[in-house]
Length: 475
Image 1 (tube, rainbow, N blue to C red):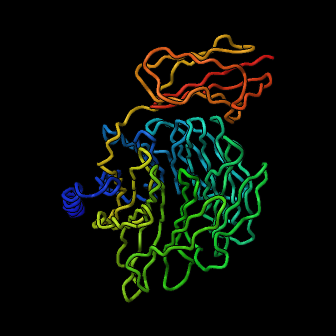
Image 2: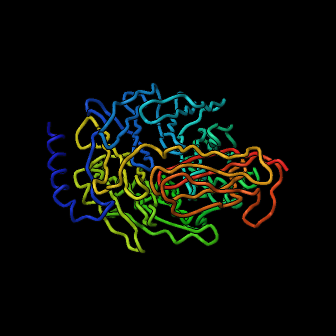
Image 3: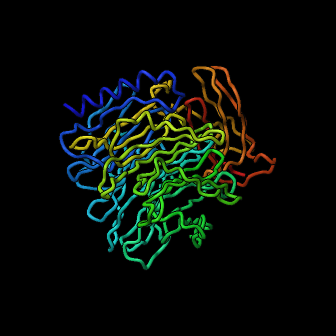
């Protein structure tokens, strides 16, 4: 009763000030677990329309629970496991966790799940980290998975066209137990295509390796001459493809730790690490960093910070939340004044509204809490509707007519891609009225060049709409 009463007082205080806080900086708190037994190691993922899934460990099992505008659904027990992660991409929520040295991957809508693939090796693997990504167009998306062995070998796998690929070796280390904490982000490759970049810790430096032409390159350090990195980290990509990093420092070191933020474009150098450590003293220790970039370019940073008393005994953990907008950091940590715990994670709903999950450990047993921004007013709905997009004639030569019908006026984009997803021709981009629509394609790309015989994809996206049609060109 003490824990719930104390939490209730804090929530009431937060609600009083919520009206004066900008979007993305006020929260309502949703208990995900019952608090009857210890729960932790939590992660969160949000779909573009707002549905949110939390994964955590409780009683040596991995659990998930889905939140929608209708409220929380029932908890789902996925069986024995640890170190879960969850992401959203390609129309599904993806769950990955360590089960007795194997990485188990499941997929579903957050309420119903199905097995997807299991990665098992002679050496035990651990620490799965997922990245679901969606770029400007609906068909530019993917899911990346990184994990590692106890001997520091980093592996990477991805889901392409709904199928999980074999795991690839990214990096091998001779250091037993080396903490790599590998995570992946997409970076632009040829027009319309993306390649993976895997970040990882290598001794006391944060490095990355990219897969170019199917070959993983030698790791490149962010700041190889600075004694800045060496612990946990989180990475995120902005809509301008700039990369952002939040990392705590080397272990062990005293002052016992700091937390730094850096960013860098694909063409330019990384910024000098910026110290974000709050209430810094000789015994502070930031942990569990999480970072995300919203559609407006603001950077959201979350972490827990462990404090120790003068006898070097843990005293309390505080959750810190800051937002970088137009070059200025604003501290919203006071909104989490009552939260004492660990295992923080964050994702963005509607591409701008933070969903923050953490373990509340103010009183035993520990409990998983989901914090959502009540100011997010975008309407939660089902995934993008699938329209009937047809082409006649098909096969065709020299041209075909694409047809679809809109139930209401909409902003749409209609393009033709090859089977790998590379954009070849934009047929229309703009506003259309309700009713039947027709567009011709003459088998040429945007430069007016005739394309060879083959299979192509017509892609329609916009305003919650999505459709694909296969086109066969015969010269």
